[in-house]
Length: 163
Image 1 (cartoon, rainbow, N blue to C red):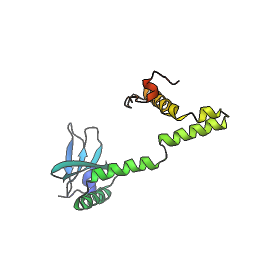
Image 2: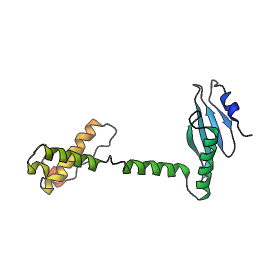
Image 3: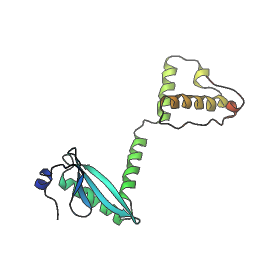
Image 4: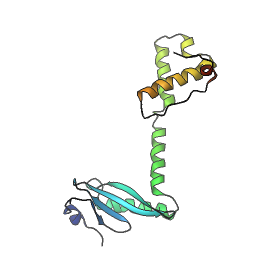
C-alpha cells in the first residue's frame, strides 16, 4: 500500500529502526533518533542495492517518488543509478577548479608577484620531478588520509634530497 503524507508525519520512532514501504522498492527508514530517510531498494546485475534519496522533511513524498522513477528509468536503460550518481559527483568536483595543478599555478603566480628569482620559479627538468615528489611528501605528512607516495626519480635514487 502506498504511503500518505499524513501517515509519514504520524510515524513515531521505536527502539529499533523500521521501514515504512511505499511502492516500487521505495521505503522510508525511521531511525530511533527520529530521522526519516528515503531509500530505494533495487536489483542491478543480479545484486540487491540500496540508493539513498534524502531525508524526509527536505525530500517530500512526491519528490522521493520522482527520484524513484528517474532511478527506475536508468535501470531500464541498463545504467546503475548509484554508479551514475557517483560519476556525476566526481565530474562536478573535477570541473570545480580546485585541482592540485590550479593551486600550484596560483602559488607560482604568487611567487612571481613577490619577485622571486627565475631559478626558483623554473628549475631544471631533473629537479622538477624530485622537488614535486618532495612537495607531495610534505602534503602527505599533513594529510594522514593520503597514501604515501614512493619516489622512483633518478635524483632520489642517487642520494639527492631536495629541500
